[in-house]
Image (tube, rainbow, N blue to C red; front, side, top):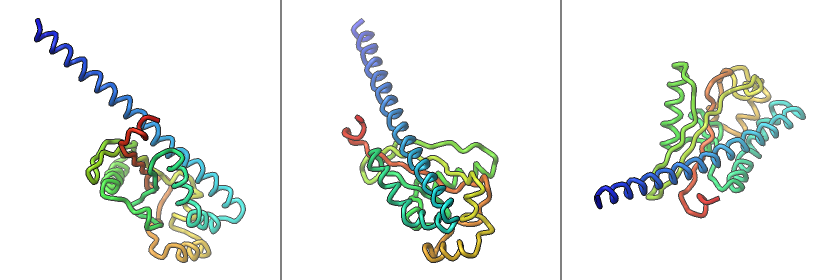
Length: 195
């Protein structure tokens, strides 16, 4: 009888730990999604505003001058490390790390096979520390995107891109292509997890 009681107690403890981990994971997933949503919403609003005032050339300038700092600001506000990454990056700072590269490559294969691309979230150990990693695909969703990332970029826009990004790889996309991803990293420090 003591063994049965011990077994039931141990089973209860494991179950409560599992539920606690699921609750923590859900909270982290929500934080990652919120940060991605914030970057997407604010960056699109700013790009649209600038595009209305000066066309695609102004859009390129916003990406060059504002996108990185806006992304970092949102990351600080949300308590996460967030960035935009791509296999065909325009800005060298948006080159993927090894984990991001594997996810992007898998998404490329899935996209070519006609599969739906879904967000990825998992715990990883990096440099001896547990981190929560999240990625969400960014698709070329609007014709407007193709003015800077498509196959028929106007010469004046291409000139601005070359000036800002001499090693640009972010061209020749078509609507519906995978452009890249939002990538979020959250360190597993109690002060960050308990928000």
